[in-house]
Length: 177
Image (cartoon, rainbow, N blue to C red):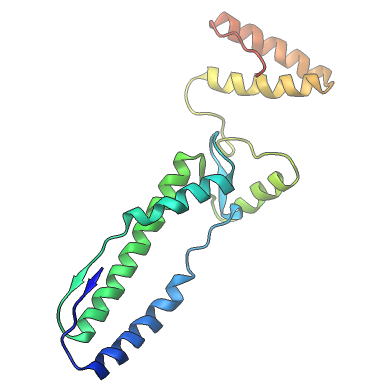
């Protein structure tokens, strides 16, 4: 970033101080924790996905050149900082979606986070199952039924058998991983 300012030193110091005071509250705005997000797909844990995205978000920042009065230079700096914050926020949103996480609708993220803390991972894709054909949903349901059957649930064993027959008829042979 290159800043050129033409003006008196006293004005510049005062304007830079005002710019820093204006930007300081914005520096703490970006907070992200798992309570703000819900799992929408398979991928790394939230902490891993967030760390990977956080390391790369600076790549969207734009520099600027400002020539003029100290007020103009300070205004250009503030405008650039706000633009960079918006670009970084959008990058984090898209990066986390690619990693299988999205911002939760108001009030739903805490429930997903408490489920993870209790040892029960949230249902992938939120309330809905995997997008696409019925086979995706049947495979996920078969996997859930298989896990419950192995744990001793007799009703889940029957569900697993029915889903297995439907999947094999479609040419898919489900097997535990």
